[in-house]
Amino acid sequence: MIMLNTKTILFPIYNNLISPRLDYTRHFKIFTIQNGKVIKKELVEQYDKSPEQILEFIKRVKPDVIICNGIPYTYFVQLDYYEIELHCWLAGNVDDIFSEYLNGKINRNKPFCISK
Amino acid sequence: MINMKKENKILGNKLESLILDSIVEGVFTVDADMKVTYFNKAAEKITGVDRNKAVGMYCFNVLKSNICENNCPIRLSFKTGNETINKHKNILRSDGKKIPVTLNSSVLRDNEGNMIGGVETFRDLSPIVELQKEIEKRYTFDDIVTKSPEILKIFDVLPNIAQSESSVMIQGPSGTGKELFARAIHNLSFRKAGPFIAINCGALPDSLIESELFGYVKGAFTDAKKEKPGRFELAENGTLFLDEIDSLPMSTQVKLLRVLQEKTYEPLGSTKSKKSNVRILSASKNNLLNLVNKEKFREDLYFRLNVVKIELPPLSARRDDIPLLINHFIYKFNHKMSKHVTGVSHDVLTTLMRYNYPGNIRELENIMEHCFVMCKNDEIQINDLPAEISDIDIELPQAFDTIQNLEKGKIIELLEKNNWDKSKTAKELGIDRTTLWRKIKKFKIEH
Image (tube, rainbow over all chains, first blue to last red; front, side, top):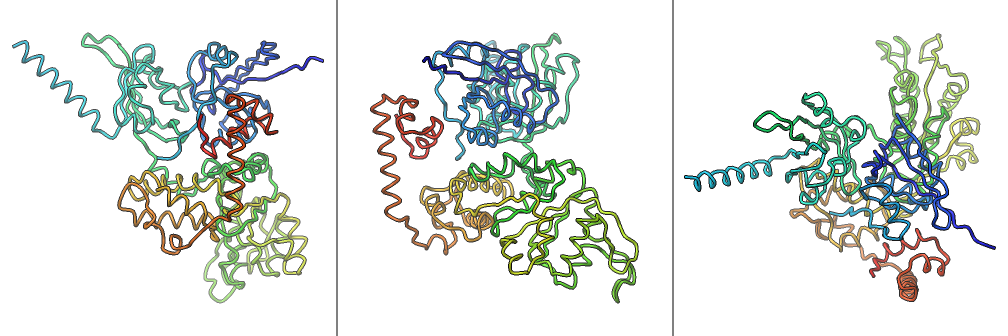
């Protein structure tokens, strides 16, 4: 029996770049991969949504991975609690970074330095 | 002559640079593609982004403001040629903290008047906003500092709780933030535009509590020279927070129950009923059900108030939050006392992590405030702590240390065995990759 390894990866996007802020983004790109291959790609709009509504949307989608740029510390803590794999403070083209992720080139970076 | 001109120009440029690096406002410029071309010292300090790294980056990746995507003032200036003055926004600092700022922006033009880019100046409004928040008590969930799984479980359902009309009972020991939660619920609810009125039922004598809650009319009693609205009337279309509800006398409990059931009440001395459109949030440090069983609190009122229950743990049960709270109070008191304390020494952190906090978060806040008053340097030292804290010989039981060391040792052993492959290691340990990452961070394990 072949084990299918399915994962959803969520990017907040801004003109196909990673959006500067997760909590104020208006579009999300959601990739579904299976055994390392893309089987589904969705673009979801979140116009006129408050940061709290965006957080609720993400919790409903419950992606396996979020790759984003700026994220408020309180949101990081809540999403981390949901055991979502978080890669934060990354800037650049979504497709390039997605490719790097698929090739295992993105290490889970230290999210915050909260002392001093 | 040319050399002198060049020297003057260099001096001129140095002077401009010195001026821009001396001011308290952040200043940056961008080219027509919105890439940063200049970033002053204050901009670096406010955003937390190294100025050398900022140059060449898209400005939205540096500032990370809430209006970058749909209302960028520089892009607007490019379009209209007009300036933006005094726009309020929040930016995200590199430590994930939201910083309120006010900004001005305009187009940058060369000597011939051609547009070559944009310039923005911004000022950190945190001291003003923090003061306003403290005066107006406009707290939201961003103000609740935690990574405790128990509290995060509450956060998960809080938006639903906030946006319902249900009465909420918040239970927890003294100093755990019951009123903070109540205010956050109000500010997330549909009633956020309405008033938030708090009353501490334990602070008033039994003879006054009724008149405080329901008000009175002129002549209701000897000293009632004019009408006075009660807290229910003041909270109309908003939220009424009843703190220490377990102190409410039985006679007032009956009247409160009637308001909750009938949505009407009578001010003292009045024969006319008043309608009530108020959401009730209540709090108690004692377990109300125990009081019901001892017949000191009405069962029917308990069930009306306890539609949704939130239990806040003591600080000693959420020690992971202590470093976060310390940082939060450092930030708060730096603004309040105009100081520049950067942190606490290792000894202080160890002491504060081990202390039991009978007074919970309020006690930690008092300790930090004491430290701020005593601290003469930029780092809080052990002798800045209150004597009763620093004198306590707090030792963790030996067994606890041994277990922690065993766990750390096992993780390192497996990481080395698996060539630092965290997925394989997590699988062997029987834990999730995220949990492994948390433990690596906790034990400060480095490759």
